Image 1 (cartoon, helix red, strand yellow):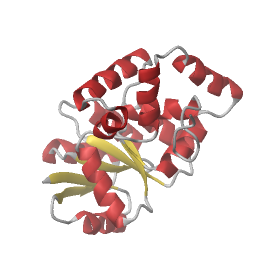
Image 2 (cartoon, rainbow, N blue to C red):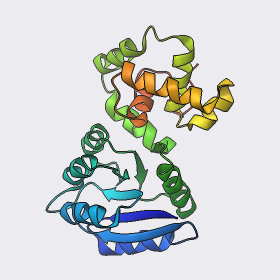
Image 3 (spheres, rainbow, N blue to C red):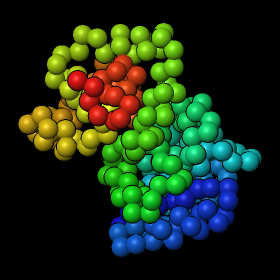
Image 4 (spheres, rainbow, N blue to C red):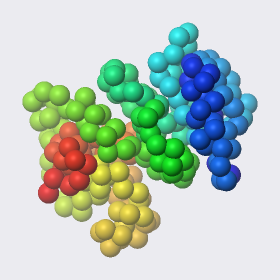
Length: 221
């Protein structure tokens, strides 16, 4: 059973999301309406996944994310966003968000992606990836910096990084490259250390910014 905490300053949004998620295999263990309450609920209920709005009055979601990220045995935090303020989203990424979902995500996709996040994978829809990549790679200097970071990677590491940019799981990467899942995990760990990325989402966005993945979410090669 996947335990989920829903955080949004609008109670009706929380109720709507809780109704969508209340299916076999997922249980909503609580709701919170500001960042301070979100941290309290995480400590109390120890959810597997937190769906977190980042713009809330009082203690906002970014502050809550900082506190949640510092907890032992922290949950996966998936940011709920409308993407109308890209800087907030990029700050959430830097703070360790496990992924991003549009609030308009269809119900079936929302349930599926919550399960993906609970399994330790990045949650990043193609639309989210496109908009995040556009925000993080504006300007020639930013694009060239991303290309410089990936320049010189061995071919296999480049292939793995490209697959991360496409949002593939370790199992899917292994199937594509004919590698075991354990071997893929090793490549991902080394890439994140080599490229100074805190998580798979950052590595995937670097692939977009460097041009390894096109704006349609598929390999540019």
